[in-house]
Image 1 (tube, rainbow, N blue to C red):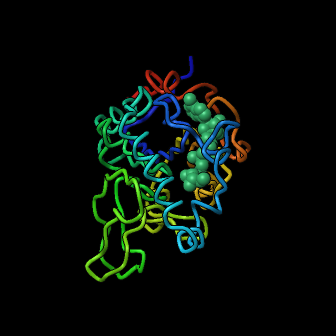
Image 2: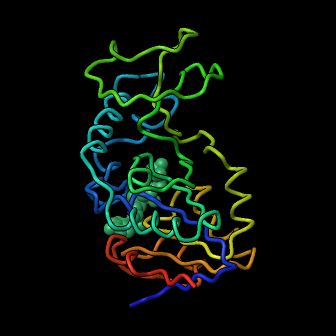
Length: 238
Ligand code: APR
């Protein structure tokens, strides 16, 4: 049974991907039965798709909102929230996921670099902040509008767009002595670079997942297994 020791001087940066929500019943992207198996990314997750067929985009994300609403945090989300409780501001969580399972497990020091399912923002990017939007739409006519007149779009970072909070991410990686990466294939940048940045700063880097990620060579150690089974009991806080 692996154990990751966390010393009083350790600052922990955690990156999670779709794999941490797999045991909550939410599909990952690149598994054979994953989200990208049933949809062409170009049709639902690009700015061009939103311009070409906004309903196809909203229908895809409405369905993911419904899945998210019926999913529950699993022991992996809870283990990370408990670790945050124990080490406080020496903990930072960056998720690529757009579900809210980390929040519902109790995580607070958290950012969503690829956006959030339960929010929407103006498709004209008029500068107004995103708004809470948990609606599961049945047609495009139901989708709300920004006060500026623009239609709302999912608050999701599409392919070709810039992830959110990259300055904060770089700052936190610069301080980290330990990086934990959970359930991500390492196939999307810049997230797949984070482990390299941490290694350059001399941090320990640990991958947790059932199969090696594409950037496996960059990790100082790998804990093989499903996150919901591997994370509980993994951390030994000194
Ligand atoms: N526990 C831990 N990891 C798991 C589990 C599990 N129970 N089940 C699957 N995994 C791992 C898989 O081995 C795989 O490495 O989760 C990873 C999922 O990889 P992807 O489907 O590529 O998802 P992710 O890496 O999060 O994708 C990154 O790509 O499509 C974009 O914006 C989207 O945020 C997403 C980004």
